[in-house]
Image (tube, rainbow, N blue to C red; front, side, top):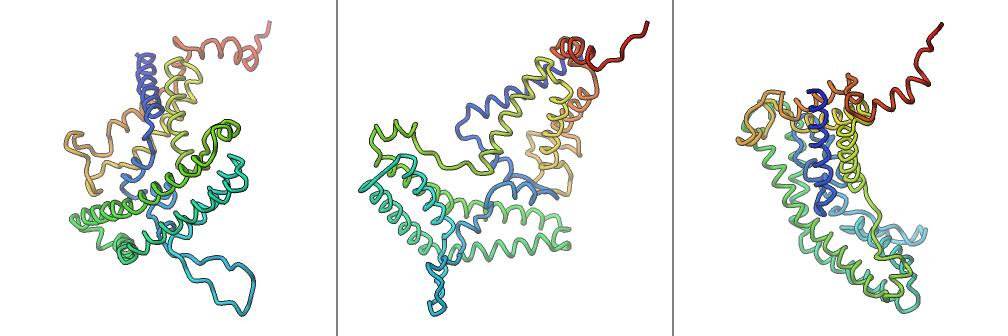
Length: 314
């Protein structure tokens, strides 16, 4: 039964990992944004610029030259995005090895989208300022212990935070659409020979969330495969238990934490199905179950025991 338990949990992890691998729209952000409880901010901080303050906010434009008599540069909304676009365009030009008129055309594409971004953010400036005001007010209310003690106020805090997230997503999604469109136009500037010589399409550098998506996907696959094969079972079981612990901490089953689990999931107090699977993983990590019908048998008796086992004395 312990072997069957090991294989069953391994199957679950392996299938979940393969589903994430084959889903082009998979992102850890969906899970992280739904985090609740005392560690909410910890999980939200894993998403780069979670609330959009950097991309939507106002920042100073670097001075072109050090001149004491020069007027200070005017602050620009979306300067972080503009700076990122400049880097992406420069990298794309180098990737496709664009020269002459094509480089100038790529710069013209950047300038076109820079103006479009500025117009878009200026048109929504009042709403963005209201959004930042509401964000600050929400943070103050969350820090108010008396405010959080009232059950219906906890519900209001959650609904307000989700509403603000939805509001920001409209603007942030439009910025990402502009980014993709800009890179598409630069891609079209390159000839088929340029693209072939460059080794394919230019892809922007991966950010922290992209690496986290890969970590979740491939760790699920590795843990599942190792458990089913009985390979490095203790390490795989302990790693899987830690992964489930993060899930448990992001969605604690406690009556005072809002929102409660959907009715279809049922009511729980601390112990959820993820908690049970986590405890099963830690139990497997404390046993030799990998040697029972698994590859750990050969590793232990063929390698570990001869090299590190006690020598028999005659």
